[in-house]
Image (cartoon, rainbow, N blue to C red; front, side):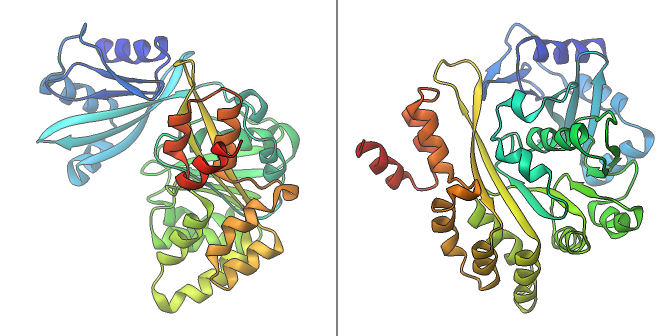
Length: 354
């Protein structure tokens, strides 16, 4: 266990985001988005992995891992950092992917997130989605928005997570954090009963299936502010993903529900800084204006791109606009910005026109 903790401390020391443990390989750190093999360490053995991961688990978690062959759990080094750990099998050996989660929750301003997020965090009801690929900082954005509420308004906030990541300290809000497999059986089961717990805000760590999405939509319809994440890259794809999860005969009703509840979609991606040290996020922001709601209701998702482009006065912005701004400020390289663009050819043309 000491050896495992030393690796976690090294991850923090190096400013890395992730630690990958793979049998017959040395520890692998992800630093500024790049994988670095720590060859000064011994290679990971099957015995080390088995002993380490089972020492982290409760008896119930160990049973789940043996049944499901993978498991999410959390770990903390007091005063230093928390860690989200995904344990799995590969080639018959136990492997682990470990994400560092800072103990101190930074504010929207401290992270340099778009100021529009402060206004979005103050919505009283509706559906707010934070989307992006794995490792793009969705959990960090959600945590900053919850902390914004915690510092400004009195609300009852319930989070449903797998596992609990950022740990909040009650300030103005009362915040209850429920962990899958510890405090509740599943996202959908927790959402089934959460409306009876008098929440003002519900945060759903991840919407993985039809039932979870359906119950999150219903909770938003019933008057709560629901914050949730999806692994989609932009606002239009997010709307399509939610609707397409449902069978065709239900999709019209889902479009109606979504159009009635949608407040914002925040899509983000991380890019390496031009200096080679650190990363920065680019954002796309969709606000649920009457025009946006109408496009969703009528299934005209192709109009969303133009609505965002012309919606600057409402706080909207396209991902490619954000990427262009970062590039022009010299914060990111052209190649990195282009690789993340939703419309690469239009991005290239807009830069060429300057």
